[in-house]
Length: 170
Ligand code: SF4
Ligand code: SF4
Image 1 (cartoon, protein in one colour):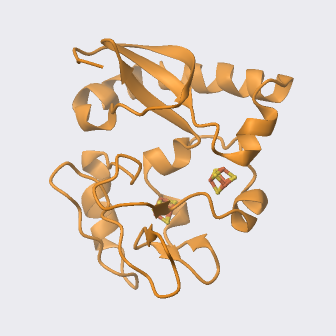
Image 2 (cartoon, rainbow, N blue to C red):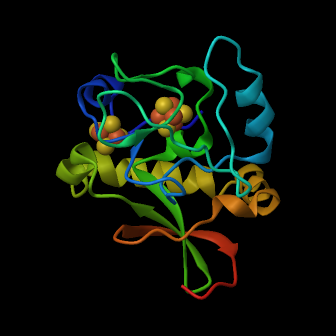
């Protein structure tokens, strides 16, 4: 589990995550190979459809204007698989991002918590922790084995470089 930057009490009151404007959105969680069966095996929750590119497919919900992750308990605004939520969900509002052949750690300033804190000491210390964690041999091997997890997001701020190289047009 990745140490979290945003307190869960803040997230529960915010409706910024787990909701998507469209199906096939790059923002819907992309799964590591090892996460797919683990998540599909979880009992007592709706079965998510996983796209060919290993994204959780958002679903319609009554009373929502956006599509939502099938694992979101909408009325409580809580993840039903919080203890085993995907790597990308743990990482957000930080994201791995492919840009000009480099893999970067970026941050989405649409998250109100990180937007307010990004320039303070707490954020600087967290970024040092997170960069060290993501650059550890174990995590670099995980990314090598799961190239789908390195995606291209727009309108995010670069904060550090990850020691992986990828070819890509963006
Ligand atoms: S946008 Fe930020 S504060 Fe809101 S739920 Fe997501 S991580 Fe939490
Ligand atoms: S798995 Fe959980 S944290 Fe991730 S998008 Fe779905 S509801 Fe949100």
